[in-house]
Image (cartoon, rainbow, N blue to C red):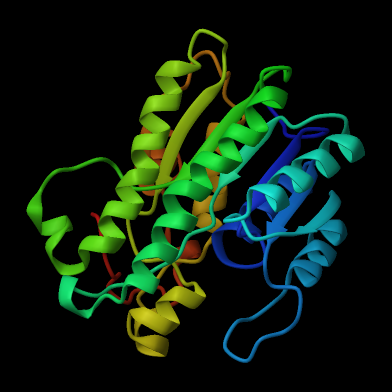
Length: 273
């Protein structure tokens, strides 16, 4: 059976939510986890830190390196990559999970927020991928997995929150381009996106708080879907826009109540689905 045992994963935005869930799933196999995140101290409205996440992953069976870093900084990203390679002798997998959110219309979006979303989402994805690629080229089954939506030019996905949509689809374009660019070298580059809203801090802040949380699924559904992708042959699985539920169903998983925050409650569709 395929496993992530001994593989080294670098995960951005790994202190909570989907990034943390992916790390915990890999840790159960005995993987090496490199956590890249900004949160080093407890914050009032954000649960967990890079250090508490690391402790959980160690308890789950993984070897963990916590690298506090802002992925907007080329120097900090490069330093994290160098520390990861020095600690674990390479990088096998990159998870581009870190993302900044802003669900506002054109007139309501401050340029500071616009810049943040594009620096974290598009530039951060490109930068982290660029920094890891020399090491991924040396790996036996290298993967880049980006948490980004399927590409679409339907105006409905842009009109309500243009700046955010452009930044997220920018991440999707990074996946599409790199998948083709590095296909011959055997690096798998794929995107994964949820069918429904996922219970994260972003939902509490932007999508309706505790009421909306009850209509969400747990981040573990994305972690289980990511695991299926990351354990596939990198030469046979690249350039795909995966949806978590569809991917899990294709693997024979039919019980989705276990992922629901409140089983039986109607689920909130994701923003791009």
